[in-house]
Image (cartoon, rainbow, N blue to C red; front, side, top):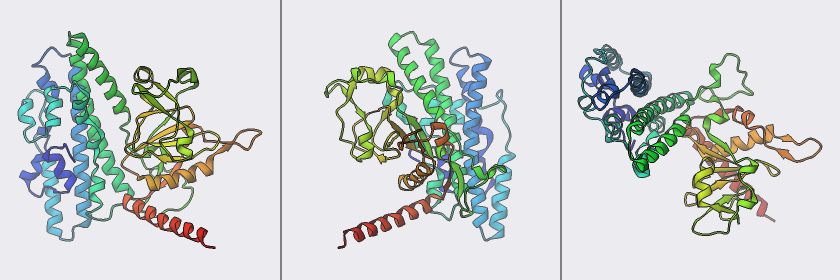
Length: 410
């Protein structure tokens, strides 16, 4: 992780505590909440302090879940019984650490010794006031332990989901702490320009927090009936669990009368042909930068995003190159942003399969339409471990190359 404290990195690297002193890195002393310190900065209500306490508890819970996953993984792999026993004892000793109440919790500075600058920023109340500062909290910090742990041993999809959920929970807690501080500062801010900026940051954080969703494998539901058999290391999940899905704006929000000529102050409108022809440079439609900033923020598309055609020639999927022009999607497109649980090459295969199996022909015509949005996101799909996704993608690429060669033979 690029911006995590030493404690977080220990859990991510798998450097697990084996003595009582090491295990105490994870004790409840880290739950010195922002509410304790914030009382010294101004008058807070009990509701403010409860919200701060809940946010910090959520963050420390995520850290402990990450550590627990690593300990359980090491216990499975450990051959020496003494080492197993030491690991269990260290974990138990850590959990027996002295619980601190709000009254006797150490001050915020002492509690955060050894923690990264980002954690301290949120806890001290040194809030970001520019977009670049706010990016300290971007999604690069969600580098999950699952990605690193694959190099340490064989993980199942269930292991990777558990690691992902722990990291998401931790990151959500950090953002909720930051949001609380921003909203508190917004209430007391007198400068109109700064107040507006804080309001914008607050809205952006709220939207980002909504995207932090944990994954529950469908296998855990006793009423779930798998469509077919899969290896025991794989999990059944919903298609929507693999990322954020967003359809284009409704008709009246984007009409041809709003289009303007291409210029330095115009923003590109991506169309179906960009997905169908796999070319991000096509297109002649643009909107003003002002309309983009005021009305189209929810439909932004950029390099690395996936666009999908949703009517007529449906299901054509294309990942925009990283250097693609920032723009918006139109009514006939859907945007997908994958999370860390799937790679594009595997997702494309499973998405194509899901669309072909579940697309509906319009009544009285042969034209197909993509399934309703909520049905699409809830379609069950098999999820292999990430290492197997890479292997499957590599094998498919070899087969496709072979097919191309066979087609070119006389």
